[in-house]
Image (cartoon, rainbow, N blue to C red; front, side, top):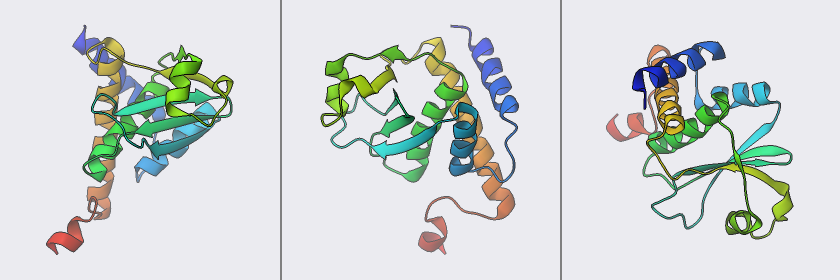
Length: 160
């Protein structure tokens, strides 16, 4: 794996977004929705295992991101940003089997689940580039919060 190439790809992808300040998870989502001309729905996975953090499914009419329940809002944000990064980097999704789709959508016609980005190797070039881009996007969000005086999560109410 060429880490320098992955870093460069993440840097170029972030620059190509031309995000307006202030940057937030919601503003990144809106930007990606406009780019893809598709709604993105984000939902927690009920009863997720340790092996699943986030999944991106391309349905016939929208993109769906499912994420494991996270220990904090910052962790949830990172999972979602990672899935956005796959979209931004235009990582190809696999056509999924009806059995696989049924695992996550038991009440949905499997034919409506078109594609999913399934990963088993978290050290491949796609995963590394997506995580590097997610890190860069998270840093943009933090810088926006710092400039606007915002505080992540519930920090102010806990520590005053």
